[in-house]
Length: 76
Image (cartoon, rainbow, N blue to C red; front, side, top):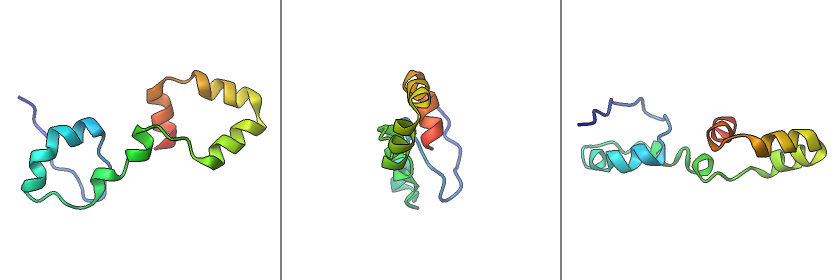
């Protein structure tokens, strides 16, 4: 059994939590936070970060070596 704690309105939810909590939608959780982290989950690197990394090759190399979880945290 998995217990899902109530979340504060406006906080983001991961795709995994969304899939686990879809039943909660019917119970009234409809504050728009479901999509708050979609771009981060993709992950889609924003154009300004791509440009900044392109200007600093060592930073780009380091960013590329980060695990997905670290990139997600940076993008969030």
